[in-house]
Structures are given as structure tokens and as C-alpha cells.
Image 1 (spheres, rainbow, N blue to C red):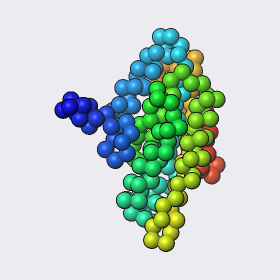
Image 2 (image 1 turned 180 degrees about the horizontal axis):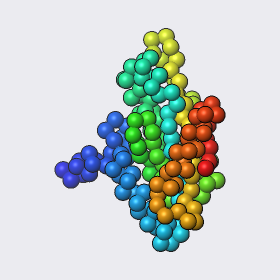
Image 3 (image 1 turned 90 degrees about the horizontal axis):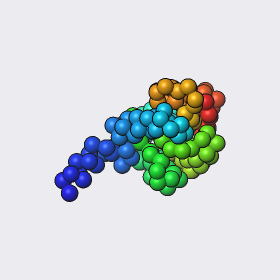
Image 4 (image 1 turned 135 degrees about the vertical axis):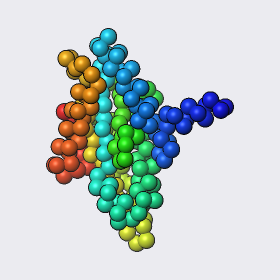
Length: 171
């Protein structure tokens, strides 16, 4: 039991219950090794909560925390059991999707985006809404490390935010 609790502390984000950055780093290395050795495709989703600083500034960190928890709670059921959702940092989350090509990853990302945009909290008399921008990328022939795949997803998120947020883009 102690070892299970220790495992949880080491691999899970305390606030959201999602996997943490440490667990993500280990898993992405494994997926990359599989890709380099066997050519097994995988995709990444980079999910970034839109205008999150404004939510924290206007409504307080408790509401911000609740938003992050809801993003995780509502996203997990939309993923397969072998996909991994991890809190990457702040309001950013990563999803590793083994044996998934761009089209399937984009579909999953769109389901997540549509589900998240329906979240509403009441704060005093205000309705607090949260949306996400999602960048999608897939391992490609010639990739030497997972950072290349991450960078493509990061560029896609940046472009999604520039084009008005609350959207999914592939790079």
C-alpha cells in the first residue's frame, strides 16, 4: 500500500489527478523508442486552456483550479485506455496517443475541445466559461527525438490561439 501511494505521488499531479510531467517524460521516451525501432506511429495533443490567466485574475485561483480539474475530468472519458493524459505545466496538458495517426488524433482533439467549451461555472453572478486550443502532431519519418514532435504541436497551438482560440490545428 505504501508503495502504491508513493507511486501515485511520483507520477500524478496532485491538483488534477492526471499524470504529471515526470510520468509524461518517461512515457514519451518509451513511445519514441518504439517509433524509432519499429516505426510505430503515435500522435501528441498539446492542450492549452485559453485566457487562463484572466480566469485566475478575475475569479481567483480556486476557480482556476476547478477549471483545470474539470478539463481533466471531462477529457479522460474521451480517450482510450492506452492514451496518456498528463499535466505538462500550468494550464497545459499533453496527450500521448500510441498507434494513432493525425486523423484519429484530430478527431479526439475535436471531441475534447467541444466537450470543454460546454463547461460553465457560476461565480457570484458571472458565468465562467473555459475553452482550449489544441495542437496536434504525429511522429514522422525522419524524426530523431520527441522534441521535434512536441515542437510541431506547440506551433499548432500557437497558431490556434492566433486564429482566435478554441480550435484544433494540426502541424
